[in-house]
Image (cartoon, rainbow, N blue to C red; front, side, top):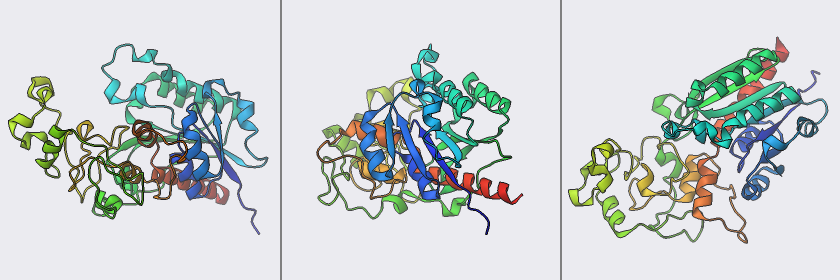
Length: 352
């Protein structure tokens, strides 16, 4: 009988565990998650049944991570370094390279150099490919004899109900590696309806009795009037002039149509950000109900299971914190796709 391949992962910059949960669902055990934000511990450990290490990636020696891998396992080092410095929203900010997060990808690379895992996985915003830090990352991987694959991923192509596009990098010391083929054609894209259409109706400022995470913050009187005048797929240009925000009346704001808007039932949602619960921060109005997305709806659009627990009732988190946790997460489904790609690569490599 052919011996079973053994493999496991460590998740850097793990947050509340979107990538970890996806890897586990794909069949890759995760030995630990590492993150500087202690408030992520409860969700990470409760849902993934694995260890959360509250430490800055820049401060952890490679030998400490190496000891997290059971002897004989193929080592997978995965992570999503904070993407804010590379986002298109920060491109016009001067001296953004002074952001302390800018160098975290170098720290990731230093750990790869120290540990030399068989597999490396990195997910980030697509704009990172234009930065020297990414080019240096790829160059160092190749110098360590990794085969490197990277490409932008349009999330609906893999069953994620939002139009997020992310860069996925995979690297292997065992041979050529790539993502599994696309799983969903445009006619089969998961939609807003498929993700959140079964949830009970609630009003702004209310929470579901059955599910406290199904809560939508209260709207101001003018925003209530604005959303009542909004149609699915429309923009603020459809409103009466008295409702239009002063910033959108100026020449610099006239092109920003993807705020104060409703989503459409039968299309994927827009990219879920850390402020998805705000009607004025994007196209985050509910398709029918006069409110913005609830916290639960944002989590479902990020493909977290409905059973995923985000806080301990004794230590509840603020709406803002929950938004950051969920919006910054790697969609669970994308983590599963990455995990399945790694396993397929390992199986193919054994059979060659």
